[in-house]
Image (tube, rainbow, N blue to C red; front, side, top):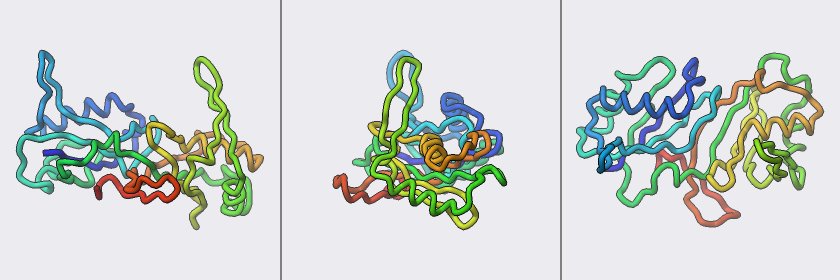
Length: 231
């Protein structure tokens, strides 16, 4: 059976990298007594895949991983067994049995929503929501991405589906998170700060991934995003 696990990552655990999180869950699954399926060959490993690696320092309420099991009692029993093995900063939110035809989490990711909360006084501009609307109203949003070998010019506008400010002053955004057009929320925020003429270091912000979505339609101009837990 294919199983999709949704979990949250917060607090000091936000500083744990993706590979260490994989090792953490491998051990947690063994401790929870889950009858997980292993690969064949000389070096068997648990059949497990994560939807989208989370950057170090980011918190999340919408992380996903898929596993395959040979047997189970119920989704609720598995959720409770896993949570008994969790440490502070990681919590399993739901366990879902997937239909046989469902694509794995990594291949399903189309978008992700984020909240970006700044420390008090970090953004010295009045009318944050209006500034964000003006930023998004641009025909293009140029951004220079620097790699170890070169620099790449990007148009972020194509990968931003929504952006605005909440009543409490946090910035929310929905962006492309697919493997072909992944947009990092930090890049959007840096481009916005440049547009608004403000200098805000990323260290003054806490970025939280709220949810990860798949696209239930093939129409590129009419997306219908569905949380991965609801597939």
